[in-house]
Amino acid sequence: MSINNLVEETKKRAAAIRKEGDYINPDTGLLHCGVCKEPKQYIVDTRIRKPFPAALECRCEREQKQKEKGFWERYDKAQRQKELAKGIKSEAFKGFTFDTDDRRNTALSKLCCDYVRNWGEMEKLSGGLLFYGDVGGGKSFYAGCIANALIKREVPVLFTSLRELVDNRQAAKYRGAELINLQEYRLFVLDDIGAEKLNKADLDTAFSVIDDIYLLKRPLIVTTNLTVAQLRTPDNQETARLYSRILERCPEPVFVDNREHNRTTAADEKRKQMEKILYT
Ligand SMILES: [Zn+2]
Image: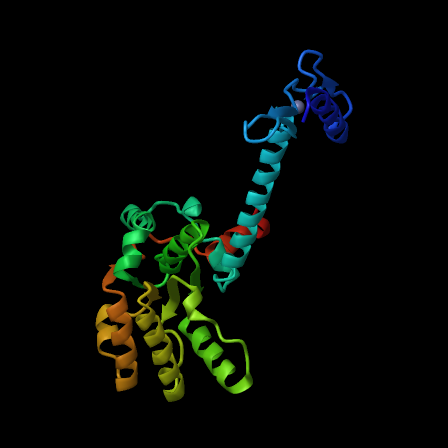
């Protein structure tokens, strides 16, 4: 490309990308941005071929691109969070977060935070937890805090009950319902083990669910009102087989004391609100 041709070509390409306010630098003949004053063109001179003009992003264009990239990244993240939140099967559990922890049971709060912080190692060890103790200590709450914190870190968690998993498996088998794909999840939280009424067929299904989680080598967190002794010596063989497999996956029993650390339950909260309205 001769010098004259280069000037002509630069002009032609400048016209194609020119926006209102942009101007030609009289010294270089290149197009500049009217806002940030940076050049929007440069001459490529590779010595292999003759020099030619190419477009260059000015600061405004780079910033705009960055803004759009940020928007799409935030959008994608929000979409992923929305998908992951579907793993928490009860709406109430979605509100169980460390932000709402009253820290009354500091040792337990710390344990759960540490579990989340050391998630990588916990996952490698398939290290589960067993929260046991009477009603009101916050077992589900703390299990929920772990689940929600990990979801925030984009770890797929399934937080449900054994009853729901049994029902899902039976519905899939007999009525063609969509089977929950356990492989999609990296942590399982089963709430209130032992509270469900399971007949012989249910117990078989429950065992196969727990066995699948066991074979996947993924951590399992369970909450229960039963004591560890009750879990070890249930009154029939099928339940014993089921609990023994759960205990194998949850080698760390954590006693959640409800006497010293009684948490305000949703019912307490509602009662207080009603009392305020009715008696004041
Ligand atoms: Zn600009």
